[in-house]
Amino acid sequence: MQEIDWYYDNGEELFPDVGSGVRAGDVAQHWMAVERIYGLDWQRFTPGDWDALQRINQSLPGWQHFSPDVARWFSLDEDSELHLWASVELSGLQVVGVLTQGMWQDWDTQFRRAITNHSLPRRACA
Image 1 (tube, rainbow, N blue to C red):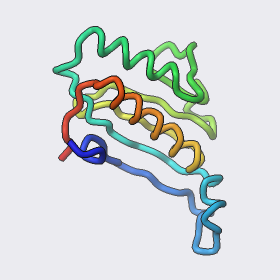
Image 2 (cartoon, one colour):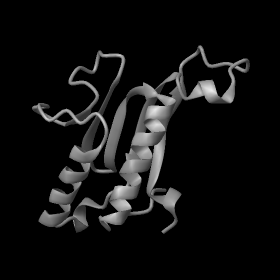
Image 3 (tube, rainbow, N blue to C red):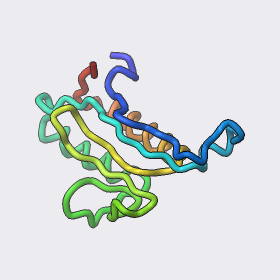
Image 4 (cartoon, rainbow, N blue to C red):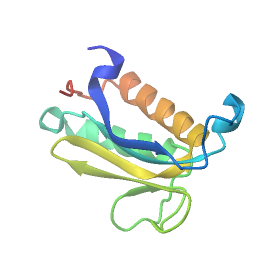
């Protein structure tokens, strides 16, 4: 499976202040909305895989260990400017939030690398 085959975006959008006059290095500081599905294959997950996913979540930047319901990073409040949360869905792990483009790229790269390094079951996304 190729790296890009196991995730897709429902929406990933730079906020309107990012236009053609923005220098490439400045884009990393602009806010963006994220909604990505990672094609984790829940049917093949073992108890050890669930434990590994929890450890991965806790190791990522901004982990909020007091979240009572879903995995959260950067804030417990979805109304906060800076937040990210994840939910187990039939389609895979849904990750939604608002971050700067640079923060999102760093978080996403670390997450994908950890999933791959732990050999967690994945499936190709259509």
